[in-house]
Length: 193
View 1 (cartoon, rainbow, N blue to C red):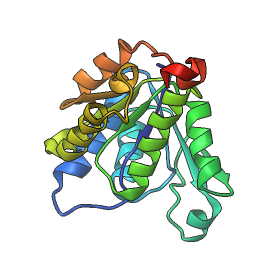
View 2: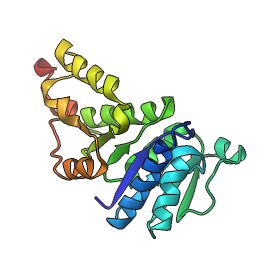
View 3: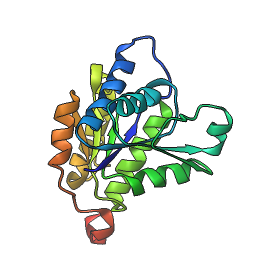
View 4: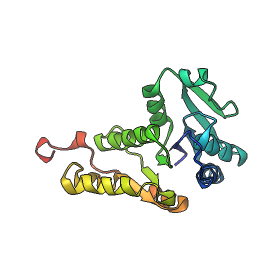
């Protein structure tokens, strides 16, 4: 993996461990020679990931919609900053520029990005690993929901492993490195759907 898209919140929670985690993830990626592709913001966890990677000498590519540049939340010290027209272009650029996806704690925007990465993997638009860092057990309910989708039958058996989950960053990267693409929907027979 040469570059990973990092999805995370632009908010700064009251608990400083979330900002510390984001900074450590950015630094850890840079130390491994893995570039960061992220939302291009300077605030919250997003800014901490970028600052951590930059401080460790890493490559950081930001993809940000013009409306957020106009709102003055763009990080101006990145390796590259790509300004796009909207969120659809932004998410497409994440996929085009990355070899995988890592999701840290975040809110609705982070969930949108995670679910799109999973949906596109399921459909076959990419075959890259999709990782979820369950730091502080933040995503326990989401992980249970993912399992419930499989148990009920809304998630096919061959797609249950698309979401790679770990409680530590090192374990997550190791699991993502071992990722093997599954059979996407576009390559399945209609009777198997």
